[in-house]
Image 1: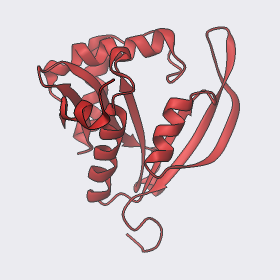
Image 2 (image 1 turned 90 degrees about the vertical axis):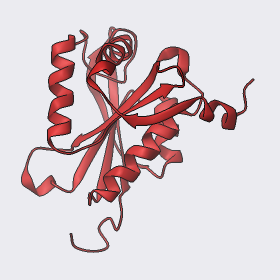
Image 3 (image 1 turned 45 degrees about the horizontal axis):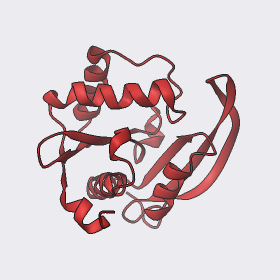
Length: 182
């Protein structure tokens, strides 16, 4: 087994590029088809993923890639507005997806850590995770490791793969959080 430090050295975290989108589509498509982390039931096409990424970048929010030394995309994470109303302007929601073959190598921790740091540096005050499936121990544990705490459960808010699926709400402060005014 590879020590976590060695595994961490085998990839870099960087801003996304247009050329990453086919790999992002493959990773997300896998999670849509086989997982419960997304409540989409049909993977969006490349044009739709490009549109979504452009929307994130137009807001000057991070859309990050974990890439192997050889350039292979191992995972991605991005931040988007938590809600559209102006009162939520200091709160973001994170999304993170890892290639199935790259799980348990510290990639999620590195991506989410970088995402949190960049959002805090951007003046945002809260980050919310809406995790599909209360049994998603990997995502829940990852968020807990990075300072998120469980703040709610929305039972049976989704229906996928023939069953009802919960949404777990987790949250962490960024920067000063609510301790000071923006």
